[in-house]
Image (cartoon, rainbow, N blue to C red; front, side, top):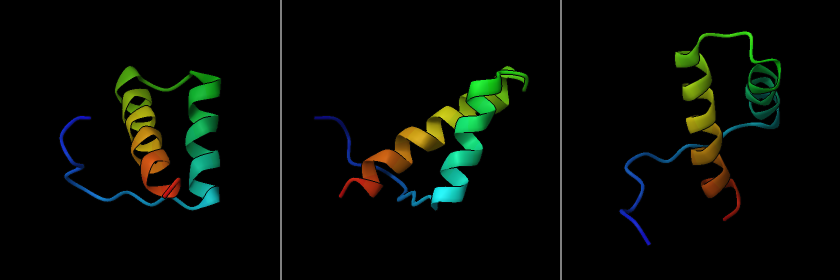
Length: 49
């Protein structure tokens, strides 16, 4: 469906919870929130396999 992933991202449960907490609060800068969202999406694809 798209290009194959360039980097393999694996997140621990603690890391996922931390990033989700950042997004849920929404108090960080837009840059930090965008990076957190990107990491969660990339990690979701590799953790599902």
